[in-house]
Length: 483
Image (tube, rainbow, N blue to C red):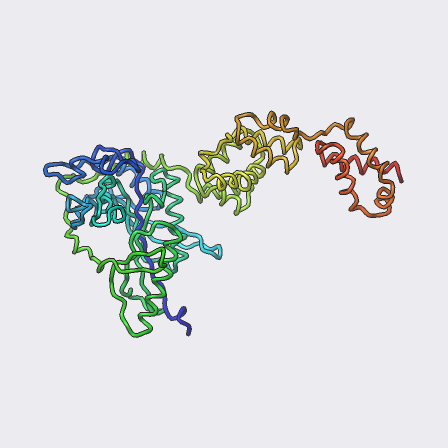
């Protein structure tokens, strides 16, 4: 039996989503990223005595919204708790979180595996909490600097069941979380800025064993690649430890993206180490039936539902539908173009190929794309009506990035409108046929491939203005006069 088949990998992820709210979780101060250090703070953020936290309503509503979207049960009464620990960037000496009564519990997500099948990953809980500040270790040679702008930032922690069986599955799960929180508008999903990050619990056990083995936790993974690479490394490390006769030690690890390996951060804490107790300054959170129904109505069409609709309503392939629904703003743009009466497949083709090409080249999102939905629809209509060639379409789109003119105006300025006037084309066709009698006879004799030669000559004579489709029809019609 190979090493790979001796052991089963067991992974559970704790994903932290920073919420898109204007103010912090319990204090009326800006939650904006990128401000000067220690400017978005209040006495509460600084841990001053006598300050009282007041929950941000959006923290509660966003938690319920995410819970409903992930098939969770919603606790109509939940309680905040104090998670006690000392760290320099947590001046209160505790973090306001939830422990015994999370607001959302017992949910699930379905992820797509590499073979095209789906797998259900259980969600233990989604709970509300505040973030800690930030310790900065690389700006002073002798001291650690503290920025408390992030202290009190509203977070949702999404805790999975240990249902994930490989680093690839973990990556797929993270991508699904990223997609859903962005669709819901509760988090921007910017992993580089730390808006979405995860801690990964990982262990291995002999195949067939039900009992979970000792696990390690890898903290603060902030990219899909880091999640997969860190877990892959840690799984192999644990296998080597076990096969050499050792025991895996429960500990907290960090991923080193330069050395591509995990390193120890500290021994692993358990819940009792944090001395949780109910937060005395915040009353229980009550979610009424009316509030629950109101939030349920706010939930947009989610990616899986939208993908299925695109396949049935617009008859798109699964690949195209998946590409268009990966990101909500892109799907919204697609539907905005459709409102101008152009064919869905034609719209899908240009967005997936040309629009996304430009977005990648310019490193912009679809919300920053300079061609409006209406202007893109006009471009597609020109191609659908055979007024421009497929090659001209790309050139025209690139030109439209630099101005706000409609497609037809730009096409005329660049002399890209195809001529479909038989009165203009017939003399050119006749001239080309007269100038190439040998090729005409070979075509009549059965060399049908020469049609491309005639079309090329006519396109050259017309300076690229001729409609190739009409040229083909005219050549086939006029060459009969030579038979």
